[in-house]
Length: 434
Image: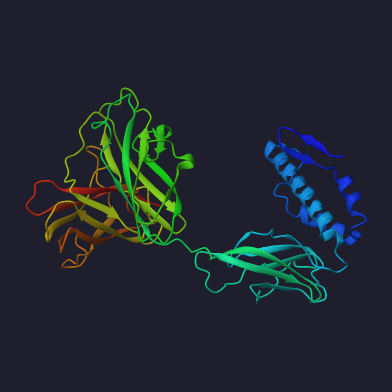
């Protein structure tokens, strides 16, 4: 007897009724194999004390509906199969399978125990059968097919020496490890200067360079100097909340996201804080330098025609949210690309690395050493250098090291000033000995 669930739009068939329908069509072993195949699909186990959730019930209903479909398919055709004839339940016709993926072929009478099993994709045999394979379950790796492109139709054949079942499937190319980099540039706050007891938005431009494919990135905003982290919100280009703080980036397409302080606390005039944004997707990560702000004070004058961005820091993981983290005795190299929006070139820039106090009137960090590797200096690794560009772009590389007794925290500024101009652009980086 079937029971209709109007709110789910499904028909639930009692298991006993299903078994009664199968008794005259399948052997006991074949019924056991079918039930095993269905039970093997479960994704959640209920243990004593666990909450039984709506998601779990929805999954049960979906599995029962799937079982009902399988029974109908057996009654329509497979149920009349002669003993020993191959039957395939999964993968379904039209399934998308990826090269290099380990898939499960679920069915009956594969002839595995007699070494009669055969699986091909467009007549190309699979390379082997993984552990767990048997007469009713084959675990195989999808082979690399010729002319795969972005994916194409293929014929999956499963045989046991006396019968064969074919399925039309789609074979996709293997997943490619994500490569490339994403530059993260900070912009001016809105409003500027920042107003107490109002929201403040801080724009960050994300510039993917050399990404080999579209990917989803996790964004992380880091605020230091004040205990306002619970007020941070991550917003997308339209200033709407980013679910889970994630954004999808496409190669060579820039995007602007916003970090919002909601709101800036009342009675915070004159209080300073620093803000940085980092992102991560597997092996690709990026981080802005920290930007220092003071509530109700104009930002420090700078040359905003110079756009510096930090590249892939080595070792990976050294740069976190605009902060350089090194163990005592550790060493890192920091690449920085410089782009100028001012027409003309070539240009010369004075580059300077210098420690700053972490708080107004505070002491400088000790035990931290740094210098430029590119452009080269004489003698090597001086904290001052001259960068000459042939156009509007240039690059630099500096190294930093922490002594075993270096200060636990500090602040480093990279200044870039075009010769003949009054203003400079700068990157501020926090230092932390781990």
